[in-house]
Length: 66
Figure 1 (cartoon, helix red, strand yellow):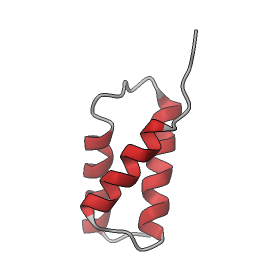
Figure 2 (figure 1 turned 90 degrees about the vertical axis):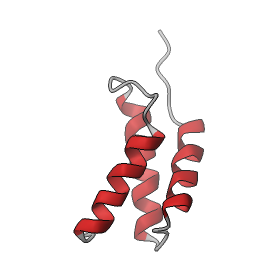
Figure 3 (figure 1 turned 180 degrees about the horizontal axis):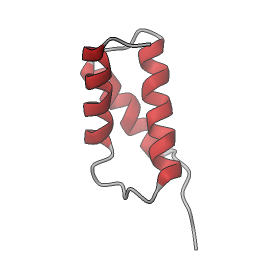
Figure 4 (figure 1 turned 45 degrees about the vertical axis):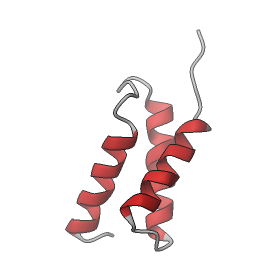
C-alpha cells in the first residue's frame, strides 16, 4: 500500500493524463492506471516520470471500435 501523499500523487497524475479520455473508456483508463501503479510499485514516484509512463500507456491503450 502507498502512503496518503503517494496515493494523492498517483490520483493527480492519473487525472491529468486521462483528462481528455471519456469516463466511458474504462479499458483505456484501467490500462493507464495499471501502468502508473506498476511504475510506482517499482519505485518510480517522480511526478514527471509517472506522467510519462501514463502518456505512453495511453498511446497503446485498448480501444473500442463500433
